[in-house]
Amino acid sequence: MEAKKEIEVARERDAEVVLQVAGEGGNGGKEEERAATDVSSRSRRVAALDAFRGLTIVMMILVDDAGGAYEQIDHSPWNGCTLADFVMPFFLFIVGVAIALALKRITQVSAAVKKIVIRTLKLLFWGLILQGGYSHAPDDLSYGVDMKKIRWCGILQRIALVYLLVALVEVATTKIHPTTIGSGPFAMFNAYRWQWIFGCVAFVVYMATTYALYVPDWSFVFHREGDVNDGKRFVVNCGVRGHLDPACNAVGYVDRAVWGINHLYTQPVWIRSKDCSQSSPGMGPLKEDAASWCLAPFEPEGLLSSISAILSGTVGVHCGHVLIHLKGHSERLKHWLPMGFGLLICGIILHFTNAIPLNKQLYSFSYACFTAGSAGIVLSAFYAMIDVWGIRTPFLWLEWIGMNAMLVFVMAAQAIFPAFVNGWYYETPDNSLVHWIQRHVFVKVWHSERLGILLYVLFAEIVFWAVVAGILHKLGLYWKL
Image 1: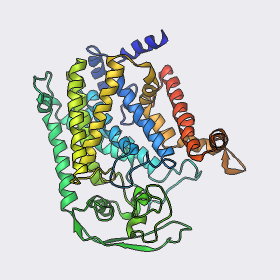
Image 2 (image 1 turned 180 degrees about the vertical axis):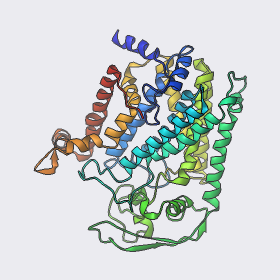
Image 3 (image 1 turned 90 degrees about the vertical axis):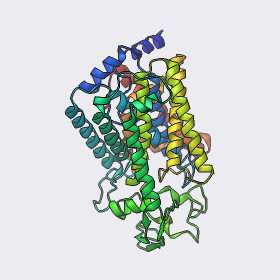
Image 4 (image 1 turned 120 degrees about the vertical axis):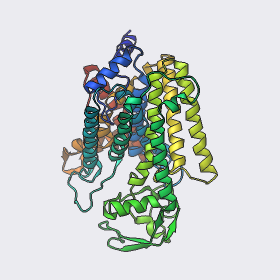
C-alpha cells in the first residue's frame, strides 16, 4: 500500500523533471512551475527521467571510486568506450531533456535569459571549486590552489556551457515553438529545426577544426615532486593536420592555446595506454620506450570537445520535445527507439570502419552518436518498465538519487562527505573512520582489495546515499542551484 501511495503522490507532482546538476531544482522557478503545472494537467510525471538521472550519478560514483581496481569499467585509455565513458554524455542528454521541459512556457524572455545565465555562473563556480584544484578531497586534507595552475575546465563547466548555449537557443526560438505537431516521421524534427540547425553548426565547427587545424610541435615541463622526471622538459613532434592520436590532435592544441598548458588536467587516462603503461589497460610503471607525450597534461573536458558535446544536449532537447507533444506511450517509444538505434548504429559503423573512432577524450562524432543513441535506448527502457508497465518499486532508489542529484554529486561523486569524515582521524590521517571501514569491514573480510573496494563503493557509498536521498525525498528537501 505504501508503494502504491508513493507512486500516486509522485505522479501528481508538478514537474516532469528535476535536474539539480543542470540547475533545475526540486522546487524550480516561477516560469518552470507554471510550465510544469500546465504539463501535469495533461500528463503524469515521467518517473523514468529521475531514474535515468539517478543511474548516471550511480555510474559516476562506481567508475570514479572502483575504476582504479577494475580498469574494465574505467575510462578507455584512448579509443573505445567503457562504462565510465557513458557518464558525461548521459548527463548532457538529461540536461537537454530538462531544458525542453523547463522552458516549454516562457512569459518573459529577458527573465528566462537572466535565470539561464545565473544558473550557468553557479555551475561554473561549483565546477572551479570542486575540480579546479581548490578541493583536494578526499584523502588530502589540505585545500587551496595555485592560480598559475588552476584547472579551468571540468564536468560542471562542460555542463554549464552546453546548458547555456542549448537553453539560449530554446529561448530565442520560443515565439515559433509549435503548439501542435503534424504527422509524419520527420514532423518533430521540422517543428524544432532551429535546434537541429544549431547542433549541425556545432558539428561543422568541431569537424572543420579537428581535421583542418594545423598542430605544430609543442613541449611541456613535467612537475611531480619525488618523480625521477620532475622538472624535465619533453618535446612532442607534430606538424600535422587531422590526426586523432593522443599527441597531435587539434582538441589538445586548442586547449593548450586557449587555456595554457599549465591549466590542463594533469592525469589524463592515456597514461594507461599501450604506448605508456607496462600494465595497460591498467595503471603501471612507464615503459622504457614510452612516448614523450605520456606524461603530458590533456583536458578531457576542453573547449573544442565541449562544442561537440552540444550534440548530446541537442538530442536530449529533442527527446524532451517528444515528451511535451506526444502523450501516448507508444508514440513516444516509436520516436525515441528508432532515433536511439539509428545513432547507435551510426557510431558503431564509424568506429569499426576506422572512419572516426569512438573517443571520449576527443568527444568524437562517432562517440557523440553512440552515447546519445545509448541514452535514448536506456531512457526508453526505463520509461517502458516504470511509466508504462508500472514496475516502479525496484527503481525508487534511483529516483531518489535522481531527485537530489546535485547533493549526491557533490557529497559522493566529488568526495566532499568522505573528506569531511577523514578530517576526524586518530594519530594519522590514514586512520579515519572511512579508512577503517574500507580495511576492516570490506577488504579484510573478503581477503581481496579489489573486491573489497567494489563492495565498499556499492554499499558504503551508493546504498548509503540512496538511503539519504530517500529520507530527504520523504522530507521534501532538495538541493538546487
